[in-house]
Image (cartoon, rainbow, N blue to C red):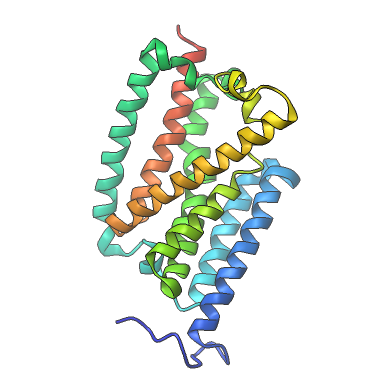
Length: 249
């Protein structure tokens, strides 16, 4: 049974509606600070910052009267979500493998950020930094916390739109040098400041659309594990494909 969104509850003078709105605004502010910390202030502390952010966001959801179901982590949906995740990983893996093997698409995986990676560093990224430093934080934040809070107040369409829009903005700072870091994009956008801005804007739009896909996976599976699986696959398998492209032998 859904809870009414009016009337003061056990958390003081704020109604559930008020707490939902305040928690949503607070979550956005927390994510702004986290983004600046990870990309400007304390880059090397990303894992710790991400873990602390997840804890704070969970606290906000609980204060707003939510729980595991609202976050997409209800026990009854975990098996279904895991099945979705494994299936998606298999599909993404097959697409990436075909793309890395075909000469016409192989160069799309080249990324100067990965050229100097050793095998051990690659394994650390794929098995540790991507799932715990990127996927857990971003999925918990955008398809868990924000999606759940906004959907409670405004429905699924608004939840998808708001969380996906903010997910796109989340990638402004990480994508500032995308045009020069991805060799396949340099001929398209060039190396000028204008080209960098256009490439960054394109990345924001692309990741926003990707966020909408992740939201739909969350909706269809009723589990946060499904978008987590796709997010891990696109990032981690992308690293592997880029590494294989830079180290063909």
